[in-house]
Image (spheres, rainbow, N blue to C red):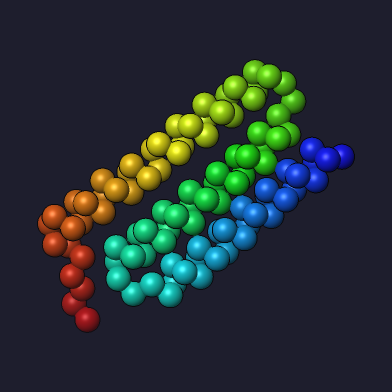
Length: 98
């Protein structure tokens, strides 16, 4: 009962991060700020979802798999956002026509 309740809390936290992140994404004006907002909302929402799944893991083998997936996700998501934003910054693609 406690496991399921804590997993539901993390699932609701994931929904909260997703909704607040999308609101922040639509309120952002600059392209790099939009990219940072989207990456942050995606990382926190997916991480919360993974922690909820980690709590509900039925066996130790699933637990190890989820930990590896979380570790890979926490390294790859911010790194890919950094690489794309650095490319945008260096090439000057961020300037808009409005």
